[in-house]
Length: 452
Ligand code: ADQ
Image 1 (tube, rainbow, N blue to C red):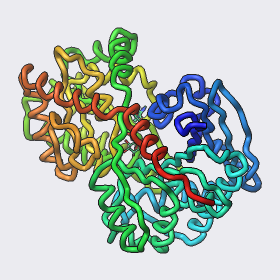
Image 2: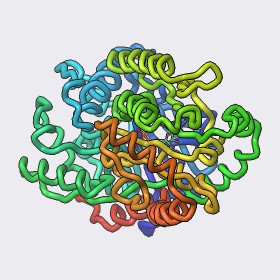
Image 3: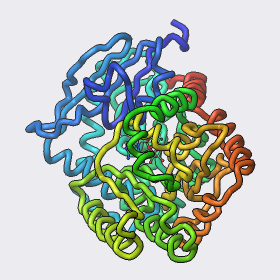
């Protein structure tokens, strides 16, 4: 069988829930849609259930069209150690260069390795010799090595969606060398930016692992998102939002409630705008939509508390009896509704302290009306900043810089908004979800399969 016809096996921590499978809405599912369509695919991962007495190694199988989903349940202890512990309280802060928020526990690392072994044990019997296996993200660094130990000789690829930090920061992880050596089991390593790939390559070279990480910037489906935004602009939610603004300009932020997204600094930056450029008082409204994410982790609980207080503080200081300066929501909002909100926003405000790529920045650009587009204020520490030459770039740690960028964004004449938007749109169209998936798979399928 030719390689191009071989089955694609996707492995990610979470697999789309059954109700999401027919539409493949959101996140990785959207990004992978083009790679999957028309191709026989097995998607393997955690079911989202964490109540098993022991993590299972016998997957539950369900097929939808050409895609077969194979999922395993985690035990409550493995959920705590593997998911909440090592993945999200150690690796996530470490990879975002936030060691102050990281907590290392040997038993969490043991759970992380145990769950990766269970993934491998459950997946190995399902693999056919010519399957192409594509593993996603930081939960699964050791999976490739675990599969090799079980005899898998398939082409194995790994893509890291989040940043990779400077090697000296990565080295603060106890037993970091072991994880780096595990990465040597993959045939292709993909990262979002040249900087991330450079750091990983330095770290790999330092422990003598051969191979070179490559850059595959992820993107969206710009045409589909633009169409969704046009439709949603005429929908009931967008109409309600427009009428509630009473002609004021909208500044929009859309993020998971995560400390990597720079939300406190963003709120302070908006307050600085109102303080230092009083002409905007009563004339702009900021809407921040940030659904709670990983809400059972202490660092996320305290961020939520901090944001509740800050939002209250900003409004107490700046709002008028007929104008709420900052609207802040932690409820989830439907993707299509958000697309319409992006189109209405005069400014997209995307200021993560560090982000692998940041797809919201690309979605904001895709949603704009080309005749009357808004402006994007973007953190220079988002991977997307490497591509978005028309954005107004800021250092998100400096709220005054954010305030100045917001002032500039609100004051840009139409011609300049159009010109900046055209350049950003070109970038969004250059690196799409499709080009990302195709580029990675072409590289992986060109790699020589290993002898078992
Ligand atoms: P995330 O940290 O989740 O992803 P991002 O890329 O911005 O960050 O968002 C992923 C998706 O979630 C986007 O499609 C976005 O629309 C959606 N989303 C975000 N906030 C939302 C909200 N409030 N309501 C509804 N939907 C929302 C990780 C990395 C990123 C990298 C992606 C993909 O951290 O750097 O870009 O993976 O590789």
